[in-house]
Image 1 (spheres, rainbow, N blue to C red):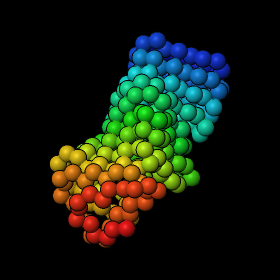
Image 2: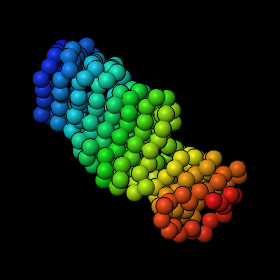
Image 3: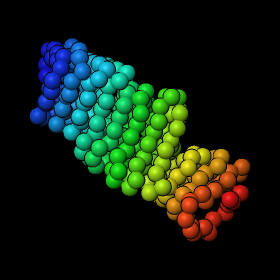
Image 4: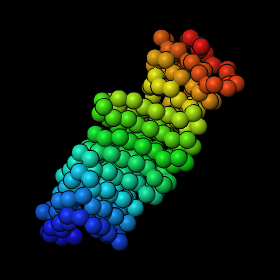
Length: 239
Protein backbone atom coordinates (compact mmCIF):
# COMPACT_ATOMS: atom_id res chain seq x y z
CA UNK A 1 0.00 0.00 0.00
CA UNK A 2 1.41 3.45 -0.84
CA UNK A 3 -0.15 6.85 0.00
CA UNK A 4 -3.67 5.52 -0.39
CA UNK A 5 -6.93 4.93 1.43
CA UNK A 6 -8.93 1.72 1.58
CA UNK A 7 -12.41 1.93 3.11
CA UNK A 8 -14.90 -0.84 3.81
CA UNK A 9 -18.31 -0.77 5.46
CA UNK A 10 -19.65 -4.34 5.59
CA UNK A 11 -18.81 -7.74 4.17
CA UNK A 12 -15.34 -9.28 4.10
CA UNK A 13 -12.07 -7.66 3.09
CA UNK A 14 -9.15 -10.08 2.59
CA UNK A 15 -5.48 -9.23 2.07
CA UNK A 16 -3.77 -12.35 0.72
CA UNK A 17 -0.20 -11.21 1.40
CA UNK A 18 1.58 -9.04 3.96
CA UNK A 19 0.36 -5.42 4.21
CA UNK A 20 2.56 -2.47 5.18
CA UNK A 21 1.13 1.01 5.76
CA UNK A 22 3.42 3.95 5.04
CA UNK A 23 2.93 7.66 5.67
CA UNK A 24 -0.60 8.80 4.71
CA UNK A 25 -1.78 5.23 4.05
CA UNK A 26 -5.14 4.45 5.65
CA UNK A 27 -7.40 1.45 6.09
CA UNK A 28 -10.78 2.36 7.55
CA UNK A 29 -13.73 0.15 8.48
CA UNK A 30 -16.85 2.28 8.75
CA UNK A 31 -19.24 -0.54 9.62
CA UNK A 32 -19.29 -4.01 11.09
CA UNK A 33 -17.54 -6.47 8.82
CA UNK A 34 -14.61 -8.88 8.67
CA UNK A 35 -11.01 -8.18 7.68
CA UNK A 36 -8.48 -10.96 7.02
CA UNK A 37 -4.76 -10.13 7.05
CA UNK A 38 -3.61 -13.53 5.78
CA UNK A 39 0.04 -12.51 5.47
CA UNK A 40 0.27 -10.20 8.47
CA UNK A 41 0.25 -6.45 8.92
CA UNK A 42 2.85 -3.72 9.58
CA UNK A 43 1.71 -0.22 10.52
CA UNK A 44 4.77 1.85 9.67
CA UNK A 45 3.40 5.38 9.76
CA UNK A 46 -0.17 5.05 8.50
CA UNK A 47 -3.57 4.77 10.12
CA UNK A 48 -5.97 1.88 10.58
CA UNK A 49 -9.39 2.39 12.14
CA UNK A 50 -11.58 -0.56 13.10
CA UNK A 51 -15.07 0.27 14.38
CA UNK A 52 -17.33 -1.58 16.81
CA UNK A 53 -18.56 -4.93 15.53
CA UNK A 54 -15.65 -5.48 13.14
CA UNK A 55 -13.76 -8.79 13.39
CA UNK A 56 -10.13 -8.85 12.26
CA UNK A 57 -8.33 -12.16 11.66
CA UNK A 58 -4.55 -11.84 11.79
CA UNK A 59 -2.82 -14.65 9.89
CA UNK A 60 0.75 -13.34 10.07
CA UNK A 61 3.07 -11.14 12.13
CA UNK A 62 1.66 -7.83 13.37
CA UNK A 63 4.02 -4.87 13.92
CA UNK A 64 3.32 -1.30 14.98
CA UNK A 65 6.31 0.89 14.13
CA UNK A 66 4.70 4.25 14.70
CA UNK A 67 1.34 4.23 12.97
CA UNK A 68 -1.98 5.08 14.57
CA UNK A 69 -4.21 2.06 15.10
CA UNK A 70 -7.70 2.44 16.60
CA UNK A 71 -9.36 -0.80 17.66
CA UNK A 72 -12.73 0.62 18.73
CA UNK A 73 -14.90 -0.53 21.61
CA UNK A 74 -16.69 -3.71 20.55
CA UNK A 75 -14.16 -4.72 17.88
CA UNK A 76 -12.52 -8.15 17.94
CA UNK A 77 -9.07 -9.32 16.89
CA UNK A 78 -8.26 -13.01 16.38
CA UNK A 79 -4.72 -14.36 16.10
CA UNK A 80 -5.28 -17.34 13.82
CA UNK A 81 -1.78 -18.84 13.51
CA UNK A 82 1.57 -18.79 15.29
CA UNK A 83 2.83 -15.22 14.92
CA UNK A 84 4.79 -12.35 16.44
CA UNK A 85 3.21 -9.14 17.73
CA UNK A 86 5.80 -6.35 18.00
CA UNK A 87 4.74 -3.15 19.78
CA UNK A 88 7.48 -0.63 19.03
CA UNK A 89 4.80 1.85 20.08
CA UNK A 90 2.09 0.89 22.55
CA UNK A 91 -0.67 -1.14 20.89
CA UNK A 92 -4.19 -0.74 22.31
CA UNK A 93 -6.60 -3.58 21.46
CA UNK A 94 -10.21 -4.21 22.39
CA UNK A 95 -11.29 -7.90 22.40
CA UNK A 96 -8.43 -10.29 21.61
CA UNK A 97 -8.57 -14.08 21.14
CA UNK A 98 -5.73 -16.49 20.37
CA UNK A 99 -7.56 -19.06 18.25
CA UNK A 100 -4.62 -21.09 16.92
CA UNK A 101 -0.91 -21.59 17.60
CA UNK A 102 1.42 -19.46 19.71
CA UNK A 103 1.20 -15.68 19.81
CA UNK A 104 4.50 -14.10 20.89
CA UNK A 105 4.24 -10.49 22.07
CA UNK A 106 6.95 -7.92 22.74
CA UNK A 107 6.53 -4.33 23.89
CA UNK A 108 3.66 -2.64 25.71
CA UNK A 109 0.14 -3.97 25.10
CA UNK A 110 -3.10 -2.43 26.38
CA UNK A 111 -6.35 -4.42 26.22
CA UNK A 112 -9.64 -2.57 26.73
CA UNK A 113 -11.86 -5.60 26.19
CA UNK A 114 -11.50 -9.29 27.02
CA UNK A 115 -8.36 -11.31 26.32
CA UNK A 116 -8.84 -15.04 25.67
CA UNK A 117 -6.46 -17.91 24.95
CA UNK A 118 -8.48 -20.74 23.46
CA UNK A 119 -7.92 -24.36 24.43
CA UNK A 120 -4.58 -25.82 23.38
CA UNK A 121 -3.03 -22.51 22.28
CA UNK A 122 -0.29 -20.36 23.77
CA UNK A 123 0.77 -16.84 24.65
CA UNK A 124 4.41 -15.85 25.15
CA UNK A 125 5.40 -12.31 26.02
CA UNK A 126 8.34 -10.32 27.29
CA UNK A 127 6.81 -6.87 27.67
CA UNK A 128 3.85 -5.65 29.70
CA UNK A 129 0.13 -6.18 29.29
CA UNK A 130 -2.49 -4.06 31.01
CA UNK A 131 -6.23 -4.68 30.97
CA UNK A 132 -9.31 -2.73 31.99
CA UNK A 133 -11.08 -3.06 35.32
CA UNK A 134 -14.39 -4.42 33.99
CA UNK A 135 -12.93 -7.03 31.61
CA UNK A 136 -11.44 -10.54 31.91
CA UNK A 137 -8.30 -12.41 30.91
CA UNK A 138 -8.93 -16.12 30.39
CA UNK A 139 -6.62 -19.07 29.71
CA UNK A 140 -8.65 -22.12 28.70
CA UNK A 141 -7.89 -25.81 29.31
CA UNK A 142 -4.61 -26.93 27.75
CA UNK A 143 -3.39 -23.40 27.08
CA UNK A 144 0.04 -22.10 28.07
CA UNK A 145 1.28 -18.66 29.11
CA UNK A 146 5.07 -18.24 28.98
CA UNK A 147 6.51 -15.10 30.57
CA UNK A 148 10.04 -14.22 29.45
CA UNK A 149 12.50 -11.46 30.36
CA UNK A 150 11.12 -9.70 33.44
CA UNK A 151 7.47 -10.01 32.38
CA UNK A 152 4.77 -10.84 34.88
CA UNK A 153 1.09 -11.68 34.53
CA UNK A 154 -1.31 -9.13 33.00
CA UNK A 155 -2.56 -6.44 35.36
CA UNK A 156 -5.68 -4.29 35.48
CA UNK A 157 -8.33 -6.84 34.44
CA UNK A 158 -11.36 -7.32 36.68
CA UNK A 159 -10.47 -11.02 36.79
CA UNK A 160 -7.81 -13.40 35.53
CA UNK A 161 -9.19 -16.91 35.04
CA UNK A 162 -6.65 -19.71 34.61
CA UNK A 163 -8.15 -23.13 33.92
CA UNK A 164 -6.87 -25.93 36.16
CA UNK A 165 -5.43 -27.60 33.05
CA UNK A 166 -3.65 -24.45 31.86
CA UNK A 167 0.02 -23.71 32.56
CA UNK A 168 1.81 -20.49 33.43
CA UNK A 169 5.59 -20.67 33.03
CA UNK A 170 7.72 -17.90 34.53
CA UNK A 171 10.62 -18.38 32.11
CA UNK A 172 12.54 -15.14 32.44
CA UNK A 173 16.28 -14.78 32.81
CA UNK A 174 15.64 -11.63 34.86
CA UNK A 175 13.79 -11.11 38.14
CA UNK A 176 10.07 -11.80 37.87
CA UNK A 177 7.24 -11.18 40.31
CA UNK A 178 4.89 -14.15 40.64
CA UNK A 179 1.46 -12.56 40.88
CA UNK A 180 -1.07 -13.68 43.46
CA UNK A 181 -3.52 -15.50 41.17
CA UNK A 182 -5.15 -18.92 41.15
CA UNK A 183 -3.05 -20.98 38.73
CA UNK A 184 -3.68 -24.38 37.20
CA UNK A 185 -0.10 -25.55 36.64
CA UNK A 186 2.65 -23.17 37.76
CA UNK A 187 6.25 -23.56 36.57
CA UNK A 188 9.48 -21.66 37.27
CA UNK A 189 12.20 -22.17 34.66
CA UNK A 190 15.31 -20.47 33.27
CA UNK A 191 17.74 -18.70 35.63
CA UNK A 192 16.01 -15.55 36.87
CA UNK A 193 15.06 -14.84 40.47
CA UNK A 194 11.40 -15.05 41.47
CA UNK A 195 9.53 -12.91 44.00
CA UNK A 196 6.30 -14.46 45.27
CA UNK A 197 3.52 -11.95 45.92
CA UNK A 198 0.36 -12.43 47.97
CA UNK A 199 -1.55 -15.70 47.92
CA UNK A 200 -0.67 -18.01 45.05
CA UNK A 201 -3.27 -20.69 44.40
CA UNK A 202 -2.28 -23.88 42.58
CA UNK A 203 -5.03 -26.23 41.41
CA UNK A 204 -2.82 -28.81 39.67
CA UNK A 205 1.01 -29.03 39.67
CA UNK A 206 3.73 -26.73 41.02
CA UNK A 207 7.18 -27.08 39.43
CA UNK A 208 9.46 -24.62 41.26
CA UNK A 209 12.71 -25.34 39.39
CA UNK A 210 16.02 -24.21 40.87
CA UNK A 211 15.41 -20.45 40.80
CA UNK A 212 16.29 -18.18 43.71
CA UNK A 213 12.97 -17.17 45.28
CA UNK A 214 12.00 -14.37 47.65
CA UNK A 215 9.05 -15.63 49.67
CA UNK A 216 8.54 -12.96 52.38
CA UNK A 217 4.84 -12.36 53.05
CA UNK A 218 3.63 -14.90 50.48
CA UNK A 219 1.29 -17.87 50.81
CA UNK A 220 1.07 -20.90 48.54
CA UNK A 221 -2.36 -22.54 48.58
CA UNK A 222 -2.74 -25.98 46.99
CA UNK A 223 -6.44 -25.59 46.27
CA UNK A 224 -7.20 -28.36 43.77
CA UNK A 225 -10.21 -30.59 44.29
CA UNK A 226 -8.16 -33.79 43.88
CA UNK A 227 -4.93 -35.16 45.32
CA UNK A 228 -1.89 -32.92 44.76
CA UNK A 229 1.84 -33.42 45.25
CA UNK A 230 3.50 -30.71 47.33
CA UNK A 231 7.07 -30.36 46.01
CA UNK A 232 10.12 -29.49 48.08
CA UNK A 233 10.31 -25.68 48.30
CA UNK A 234 11.09 -23.05 50.90
CA UNK A 235 7.52 -21.95 51.62
CA UNK A 236 6.77 -18.88 53.72
CA UNK A 237 3.20 -19.98 54.42
CA UNK A 238 1.63 -23.18 53.07
CA UNK A 239 -2.05 -24.09 52.90
